[in-house]
Image 1: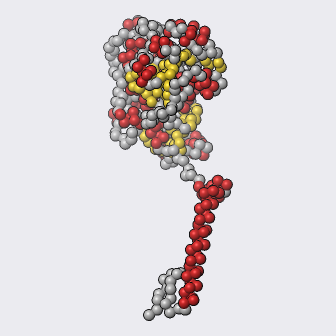
Image 2: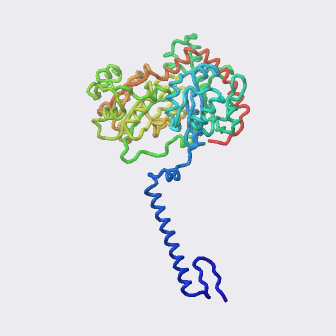
Image 3: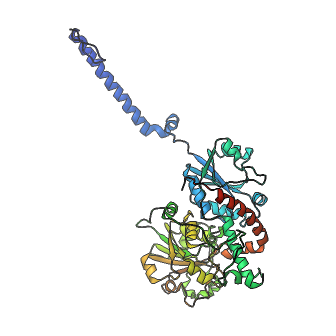
Length: 493
């Protein structure tokens, strides 16, 4: 019986032995040569790929998915931030368009915060990769083509709440028609309309007892009295927040990691009410001890405790060296409860170390020090706004007012810093100085507040043009009411 030939190395039992030997030799040689070629190829890919254009193409990573989301982002709050978080989850890179002041005025009414402040706020959100200024309110054909061609956008994102133009058309109709539209779930319980309404209601409450004297801003918001007020069903304002905080939402906003064993940790606390652009911009100067002592004479800080010299900021590293050149410990506590510029202070503080821990004061603490009408936003709302900031690593929800020795020991605090701009009378209601312990320990420093913006600054804008904002809110309240009446469950988080 003849043997079957089943492959290159098969043996024919009836063939000559020398012929079988030759077949085996050819088979072995083929395997050796093939293995050598594969080995050389692997080595070439490993060592030669960075220098070979063709191999670079072979190793090129997959194109990232770029998504676009636009908005007014007026009176930016955690609802805006959550929308940006959800949009970012639908792609690899998030590009955000910030609508111009003129477009907002034409479609919704005057914005409370101008474009430059809104740009600062959006840039500070940790899920944002790029920002486009002066975006149109509606997605036009030309702008959509620009997004696709110039910015390489794959999808346009918006919430499940309708965005209707004055003529009744859908602002995102073109994106939907092009098949490049994706939808996210709207964050319940907050909106810019609601926040403006809270401030308007505060003004109306105080107007009852102040005989319509809207110019008395200090009496309205710093030393107000608790009163019940019937909103008359207008729906333009409420002092009650409808936000329902959950542990899942806090986890979504958190970074999820602590400081390393050798990390320089900065600790900041504050009210952080109406989180605004002044809180973001970088600090420009550190003034001499004489200037700072004069500006903060109320604090009782002796000149010997203010060890900063006169320096002009030329970079964050230089500023870090100026502020920390005498420090041995690695933890810095930065107190900014009533600074004009939370984000400016946060950005500057984060540059001074490796980990920024922020303490948020309770509603009761803020009210006791600022007046019965404060804060405008509750503790959890304020905490999420701060957590969304890219300069913040962690927050303490309900931080104590005074910087105690126990806190300094617990967090290994090396430095307490306060800004030069504060709300009027914020610290005059209590006899005790919240900085007494760090001052006595010689770890108290002062930084100049870069922008003269406080929560009162934002409120003042509402008060000065309250009729226009009242009209805007009444118009918006109707669409808000229709949204909740027609609302259906939308999958998302």
